[in-house]
Image 1: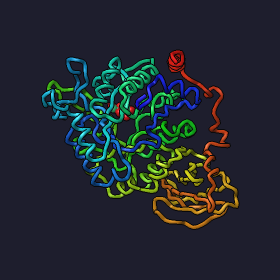
Image 2: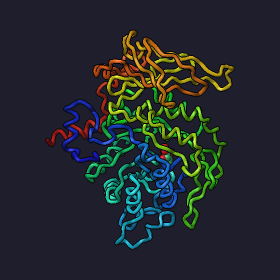
Image 3: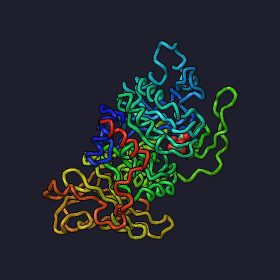
Image 4: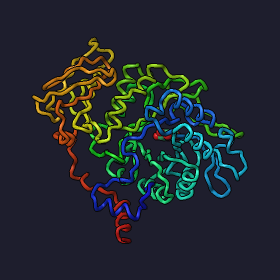
Length: 473
Ligand code: GLA
């Protein structure tokens, strides 16, 4: 795996430790950054990426913890070089026109980002082509991984288009190729949650998507949330469930006419420019401020990677404030690394909780009642017993979006939560005990018990590979 330990060493070590995780020191907390896909589609360029990097710095997003800038689909040229290497599109990434002896455009870009305190990520696909028809890495894993390492790439998002079977072999092949480069490259799987990646993902990558693509509607955000409930127990430091990009500050139609993931590609024009069909369906309603707040807090507490998908040149101040919410981000980045999960639900009222380092809890009280409801708000009560505390425990309650202390409480806390909104709380016992860190949100939740068939389940290709590595020791 990417990192300092070679696969020969770490696979048997992990098997012995029984963790099943990569444990290479990367992604100890969920990665944060910006990904170009939902705002720009495949229409990305060196100029726009640099603009995003400048804005990430000047808007305080780098300081808030967003470290990666990921070029999603569309950065590469439709053709590989004569010696089979991937190359950036030469029109949209003009530094690539330099003589071969000078750094190519992607390398130049990673240097530019480094000057802003940012790390560069790129996208490729485990099939013959990317989802937008650019060259995929199938059969080219070793040379592509080498190119990424040579260019100073620090993250690879690896997709699942133009493929049929052998899903695991494809993703494992790139894991091994990245590892062989010796450069730490955070590995983000994107197989859309279709092969139960939470069961085997910890052995293969640092993050795995749990769902198909998100888009900017409340329905889409709730769908990705619902499909990820119950999966917290599979994630932890170095291996995270990825609920997909943040729809905070994202809009419908883009200035260039590109409407995000609903556009259908027609393929390149003869001149090489990419053409897009009229979107086949009307883009969903984008999120209200309350919905953006709820979405961000839910992604934060479930410990999804936090990747901004907005065009930073045209973002509302309220969206920027949400993305910079220091204390909500701190839940996501808490060093204990315990993902939150749903711990209680009654119709539209929901409670999510996570254990925090030092014995505290993060809690999100969520009201997802229909906006057609005549009720404007609902009272939601979290009881200490639901958080693994004694009912008489006295604990400080703090509102993390408002950054306000709400006093000491024993037994429970009730908040009034508006429709499609959240109360995001940190609960800190008066006399916190390190042992209180041991509580897990899925503990005592029959719905979230691990099933026997999941226990120790290692897909055959991985088992075979690990057996072979073990034999060589
Ligand atoms: C797939 C992925 C998206 C995005 C696009 C790019 O749909 O799931 O996240 O990377 O491909 O084409």
